[in-house]
Length: 314
Image 1 (spheres, rainbow, N blue to C red):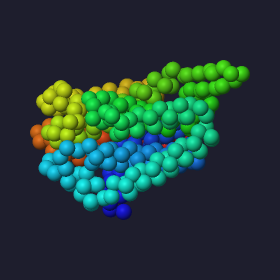
Image 2 (cartoon, rainbow, N blue to C red):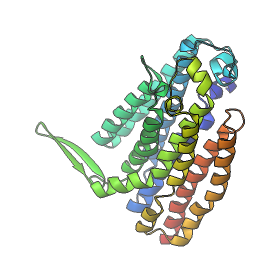
Image 3 (cartoon, rainbow, N blue to C red):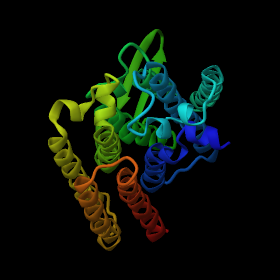
């Protein structure tokens, strides 16, 4: 179990769970609906697929690595650290992937084609993120893809499965004709409330790449900090956190009581402190966890705000 948890990096799954909870609680607040069976199916599919991509990433790094010692590589790559059998790791990846697909198919059966389309696209990006001739994670596009697909698409699907037909979007096939119906205002609102999760997840990726810059270059993994420079990457890291608070006017538009928004504003204090500590000494062992802590605080605060707003309206 210890090896498994290290291989799939379970603590990092918060990056997918918070957008999932945000989308769910937003649908509950906006549409006054919550379906337990759909919630469970998406949870299983999402968690298993997140673990699949992380395991693939670790396996791919192990196979492709030019150096398997130094830079703490033998500590943060679970396959090296625990001397795992790569074949067994591959079989575990297959099991996790099949479980994720099965739960995803069950979710599509109980919803509609929109979930199928977004799910298939997300599966494709998730696999390409860690696998292929040039995985997305080895390119300067990792922050963009991880932020948009984990921060926005997960939030969108989590909200969509609980909404009624046509309230957000619809995809219909009738008499060999494909019809697409989109409520642009609802899609825009979900995008705007997803700003904190989009930027927070992108910053986790950016912090990871800043910390691993030397090791990544040694292993021919050219990420965003390599192209824009470490100092510019640290500036971007700082600015994205502050930009994550730009969605506050949207929460007021959604009629969230202003007093509740103090919960979000109060997170600025520890977030600002953590930014300073990471920028002063970016280190995988010592300060990287601060990026994860910031994301948890920023994302959880939004979930709590919507939950409080629901209680206020009862």
